[in-house]
Amino acid sequence: MSNDMGVTNGAVSTEAVAGIEDAQDLPARSLAEAHQALAATFPGACIGYLPTRLGANSQWAAVFPYVDVTAIQDRLDLVVGPDQWTHEVSAIDGATLGCRLRLYDVAHSEVGQGGDRWSQSANAFKRCARHFGVGRYLTQLPPLRLKLGEGIPVNAKGRPYMTDQLLEILRRHYEEQIRTASDRFGTILPHPGVGTGDSKGEVPTHPEVEAAAQTKDAAAPDAPAPHGTLSRILASTGEIDPAELANLIYAAVGEPPRPTAGAAAALDTLLERIPEEVAQRTLHDIAARADHPGGTGRASAVRVVER
Image 1: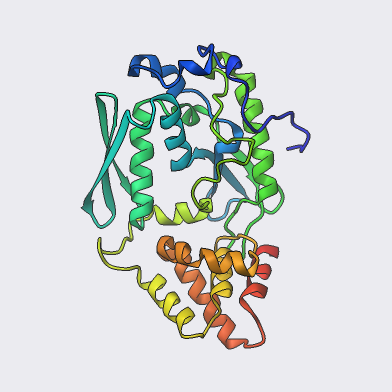
Image 2: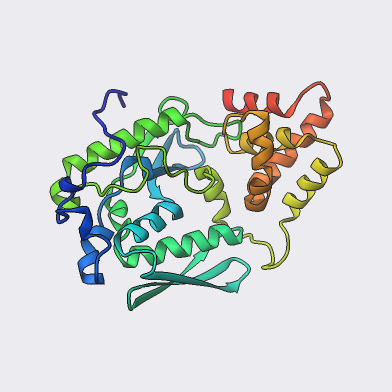
């Protein structure tokens, strides 16, 4: 895959969007009027990719495009208006949440699974949105196959992960796909802040974290994640620096280390969301660090990324 694919990776002009003559046409006055814009394609900047190895012995990974909850919420605010949509979530069991999404006077319900309440809620919300056409076209895009270690890097466990550079390339490829098939998928609908840096959205979650969270092994509904709690205790007792702990978590999903201040600030969010598989890898790295006192969390993170 070359790096010179033509891209915009951002918003197109409103006049270029099929069916939208002027920004004053949005928000739409009814669901019927909103349908085309709800189902419109997203800018590349809104797209993430979930890498999945094609079998334990395979040397290939498939990467699947997705949009996160924040991008969907932005789409709803833009197209139907913030006062014309609501959603409710309810617990079904420890591994499942139900979600009911209403636009105007129409509602759809779905369920979402995952290793924590955040991923369960996000999955259910995305499924509800697809009933209204939001992001549904993504299921029709063929997954890309990338060679492990060449097209996509792998961590110490042999799991493929995304880098910022690879994500940029894939987003460019995505926009080329959409432009080539514009007669089928329509034109990209601009989103507030895309391409301007005005909207930072939610704290990004690495696709491997989301994949690990979508397991059947979930904690009890109101019980704190035991591994996250243990990691928090280690940090509070001074056994490990908060920034080092955060970077060990990033390393567990193949992410590069963050600067000290940013890593420490992100720790609470990471511990709230950390699924069991990632927590186990992090605790393993903490144990390895204890066995080699000369090492640091930052050095461990770098080693994982480099392998």
